[in-house]
Image (cartoon, rainbow, N blue to C red; front, side, top):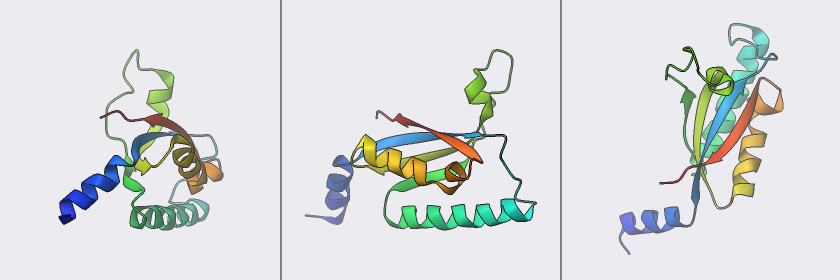
Length: 115
């Protein structure tokens, strides 16, 4: 089997999910020592998840959703994560082990991604 076919076959065995990370009142700016430490923990966690092939993309959102009529949750979403997992339960475990979620800086909302 060619390398591309192996990758393609392995991806078919996994589902894609997106996590909308909602900033909570407990958020600490990376300009503070607590926020900087948490950002470092989060970066280490993300690097491990990327290396394992679970985390595909993570970053701040850049869509303009704060205009009039925007749903309340969407206007508080400050980060998106896209991941692969074998099952929804596996994806939920990943979402709930995110250091920002664990500390109460953010709340992760998991959704299946149909493609």
